[in-house]
Amino acid sequence: MATVESPAEGRVLLRNVSWGTYERLVEERGEGRVPRFHYDRGVMEIMSPSKRHETMSRVAALVVEILVVELDLDVETVGSTTFKREDLDRGFEPDESFYFNENIELVRGREKIDLDAGDPPPDLVVEVDVTNPSLDKLGIYARLGVSEVWRFAGGNAEIFVLRDETYEAADASLVFPLLSRETLFRFVERGLEMRRPAWAREVRGWVSGEGRG
Image 1 (tube, rainbow, N blue to C red):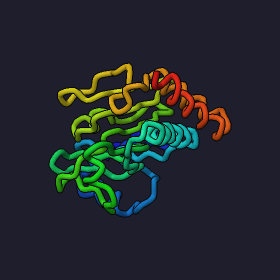
Image 2: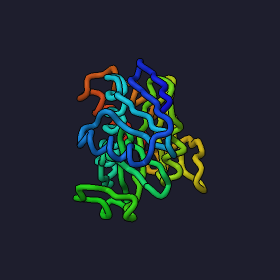
Image 3: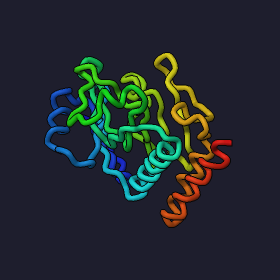
Image 4: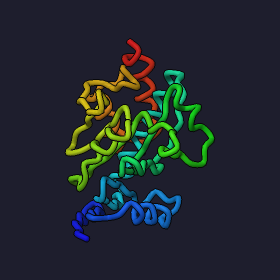
């Protein structure tokens, strides 16, 4: 079994890992958020996020939570839930994930989401890459049908929208059309620097003012 390590972000890449081994490691880890596992046809990444990684993903999640409140939308927040499909030989645990619209009622109140049993994948996934990723997570998300991905990497924010099983870079969010890639990045960067109450007021003010204009 080949191993590649990335100590700065706590990443380990394993090759020739069976599906059974992947499922066993997920089960043994339990309900905690770390480490996180991504699996793609025998290649498995084990990742322990840094503080900056966790802070960035949490700020991005707070952007979502403020937007849904200000726009009077519903959301089901499922964090780093394990999503996997044995028939596709792939699985992932995102930094943050969300359900919107009709998919909410399919998963609300559920203790477990089972893609193998026909449950839908999340509509939006947040991925933070403080260091270079070891595994192509976009390929996993696309194959499992995640509609939109926000990725923060290399001092930038990217929005990807799924079209015909392939992601296209987008200038604005599909879920929140008023939210451009540049605005998303600005909010996350300022969320790392500002006091949280002042930051939240700034985001809410943008939604109620310029965001709706």
